[in-house]
Image (cartoon, rainbow, N blue to C red; front, side):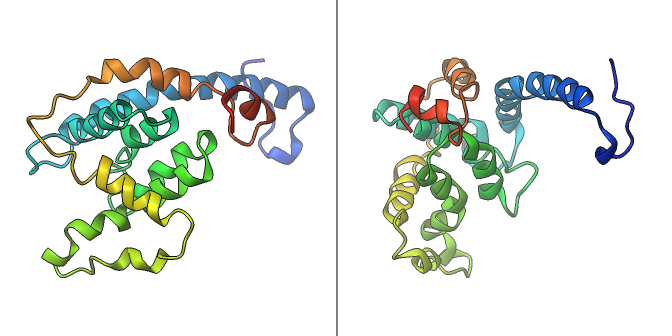
Length: 193
């Protein structure tokens, strides 16, 4: 079977869905390489800073790695701006959605809201509210988001910082995004939650 026969999902057979599930598994297995390719594309994104958006992500991930952060935080730092190209108004949510099946609720929430929390460092210079993040002051992950933006975002525009190259992170990306999902019982057994 190279293609299913149905034209409406409600008409599909069990055999057709088994066939499609196999193809979908193969498609999902390519995710790490797709993420790495998207990161490579950030080399030519959003000019005006002293470094490329790719280098910004590499600095963030390198800092997180060197600080001994758990792998999910290193991947969050590496991918936090991956949505810049396709979702310039909601890049945080896009990056969080990519990470969601693989990370804890805390990491997901922090990445999802990092754009708002990052505004603390610049919004007042362009007529915005640098304290907009305070709407989440009582949220259990507020301090984590403050720390993430302070340690792995706002300070990662330094052309003198010696980041690890993308090739350094590639094996981590391939392993991390090949693991079971966080909502899969195997995930907790293999990765501790």
